[in-house]
Length: 564
Image (cartoon, rainbow, N blue to C red):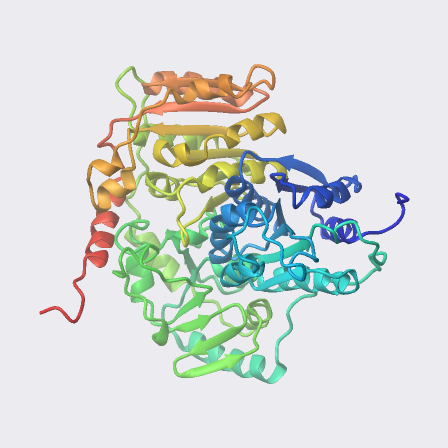
């Protein structure tokens, strides 16, 4: 077949390239090999071969975070897809448009009643697609070329519009079938609002906010899904309101802005922040996701019914719901209707006037978590991205003071340990001009460690701080037991095991703040991946984790209502 003939696989690859995808993450298998051949014909896309499908899915998650667009993972049927489904579920929970492309059985197999490998041993080959329906906004099987172009365009547009994953299964004998040229079209445009609903919502919200004595803005994780970060900055600039963010929205607002108060996380948030947020007479809630994790076991006191609750596509004020309202359009229009009011900013400044940030000293005493993150903070620049793994890194990472432009990534809604290793790979490739700093606990790292090999192979250059404290610290603080202790590895030597010398990787182990300072100085100048294993005492963790863990444990431990 001539190279200029378009096929189903090449059409899909071209559409991805049109949407600024430059890398896709894959593990080969016999059902997707022809599909991968077709992808390789498009020079704009680079194949990234991962160690397993779960990690490939995490990498696509990180890539979507870094680029603001699609992340793509290509797997084989069933054994590959179901290995990746946990990562796709995480992307769904975190509002990330990941496209999982799977090879599929030959279209003749069902009609000819063939039992196939990699299956459940039944002539029923829809089960993988059906399972993905629960963690995607579209789950499609391409089994005829005449339908392929429409299915592909629909899936990609749906992923971008909903900011959620989609599943595309391409039958192995269809991937190379001839198909239309990918004719020009606009796959996704900005969400529009119902004009009357938008106008009514603006009038209602503006009236309440202009009458408020101490209005406050509280921004949450859905802000990114709505692509509304810039609009919030513009609104705060216009109104002089005080603003806080929930922990899963850290870095969505410039932390050096004079109106920024910090992270609202109930009793474990930024000191003084909760008092101002919870005492506000009107709070403009933007894209909040209030789970047991983000509310510290449902101990926060924000009542959505008493405030203006702005979601990605509707606004709720008291008992009134205004549907088909784009968050972006709402904020853009609302900003011009509001009076300036910095009462909450002044209250916060008075409340925190005497607070000084603790300094750190370099010594030969055993390294502490506090010293570790104090030195990490000094590394941060506007061109840095911090990836914080589930666990104590959440709490220490949340406490970092970020320079303007510095990005912070966390998987708080889904909280799948091991996520950060693959996500670091994807983020590095998706945003090659940023210095990626990953903070990963030893327990989480053991789940997905092998993807450091892929980082080396494809030239990713993160600085990985591997926090070795001998177990699952976050689980210890929620509910301890022998299951929270893990086997101790010589983590820093894995760089050598994975071929670090060939790819200019470097690893070391530090036990004191003095050794850490020397290692960071070397890492900051090193042109390649760095893994710094920081030896920390098992009982050394953030005090906020201790309090948070107690609240979450209490919430988890509530007895069934039907018991006496």
